[in-house]
Length: 228
Ligand code: BTN
Image (cartoon, rainbow, N blue to C red):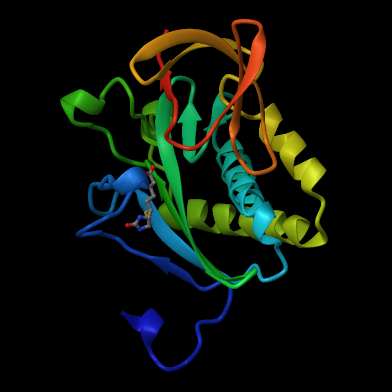
């Protein structure tokens, strides 16, 4: 692919596909999107200024940007669902997949892949209760290029915030827009279903749940959100 060709790829390069033949999602899932209807694109970044132990803050900056961009189209109800989903009410409207390349103690580059359901009107039967799109919410089409421009300009400004190292304000906004933050919900770990309140996210990006009188910390994939 062009990324591997001679010239170094400039930071901020956006690659958009109208149709992905082998779209990749989180956790080795495939990411299928109906051709031409949704937004699927990747941004090449070089966050060499970011300490490795602050890796998750790139995810936070990108999530905040998507949230703000969607807020331009949808008044209320857009949330970030830990760790990489974008939700509208109780349904998934998009996802983020960040692939970092690290050399020694520093970041070399990151490919931030974003998939958003925009004008898709029909979802597979098994997805109808979990997926939604901007069309389903607004009942009209949204111009993909306009949305892309909105998301990219928001990413640019959040990325600049990340550069200044203002992690507290990035995290504050993230928590304010986090799905289930400070709410009681159902979770499952190793087959055991339990009720807990999502009380925070650690600097390393782990989930903090308050359950049975104490806080517990979970890594990616260790716990599953269940619908009530
Ligand atoms: C998910 O929710 O599983 C993450 C979806 C991320 C998909 C994006 S679309 C652009 C880029 N190319 C891919 O194949 N995947 C990412």
